[in-house]
Every structure is written in structure tokens, then in C-alpha cells.
Image (cartoon, rainbow, N blue to C red; front, side, top):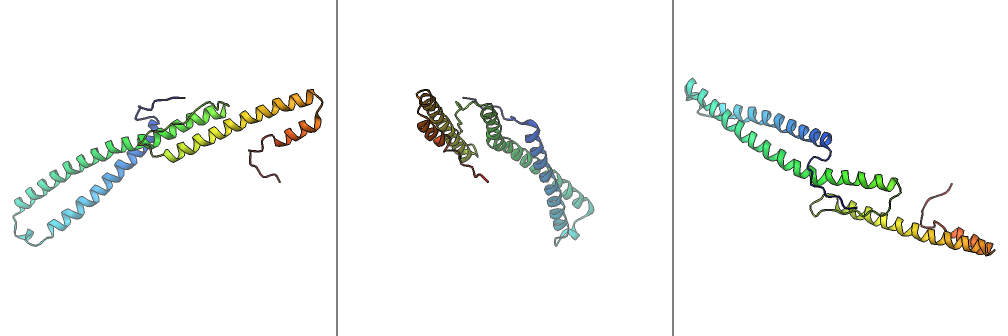
Length: 175
């Protein structure tokens, strides 16, 4: 199963939710930083010697510079976050598709990953699990065919023995 993941908003509701949370954190942090620095600048030595017009111009310049710096920083962080979320949420979306296929009984799939994905270990583990299940099912089908042959030929002891070996790979505690 080869699915190219080039769409950056594969789960738009989830990704936009996290982008809005990140934007809110940046805005709240920026407001707090703005007022903390403005307060420390206005209370610094020598500010009381400036005229009211000079202080007003200083505050206007400070506010304008701060606003543009934060706007640029916010744009940079949000754009980078889209790419980061693509490397994190994209594979999760792909895993959901893989799990749907597995749920439907399609074990012919292969899980791939991209070099920059954040879930490489998970993709590798899932691929190994699918391969193990695929091999076990194949072996069990061969055993079932051998059981059918043993039953048809009247070898019930051999059939019982083969039946007891069936699905030995499936680890489950019985109570």
C-alpha cells in the first residue's frame, strides 16, 4: 500500500486546533512580555528627565517595533508548526488508514515512513507486527490444510496434534 502524504493539513480540525492553541500562547506571552519590558523601560533611571512628548514617541516606537517583531516571530513559529504537525499528525493519519485495512483483514499492506517523520519507531514496529501476523496466518493456513489431509486420511491423532499447534503464536492468558 503506497500512499503519498503530501497534503499538509491531513486532519485539518486537529491541526488548526493546535495552531490556534499555539497562537494563543504566543499572543498571551507577548502581551505579558510587552508590559513587563515597557514597565522596566519606563521605570529605568533617566526616563523621568524626558519630556512627555519624548516618552510618548518612545512608547510608540517601542510598541511598533515590538508588534512587528512579535508578528514576524508568530508567523515563523506557526509556519514551522504546520511542517512539524505534518511530520507528526501525517503519520498518525496514515496509521489510522493502515489500522482500518488491518481491521478489514487486509494484511498485504506495508507501513512506510519518511525520514523526517516523528514516528519512525512506531512505523517500524507496526510493520514488523503486520509481517509477523501475515507469516503466522500463512503458517496456520498451511497447518489447516495439513489437518484436512490428516482427517481425510483418517489420521485423527495427527490432526489433533496439528490442531494443538494451531495459533501458538497468538499469546493470550487464559483464565
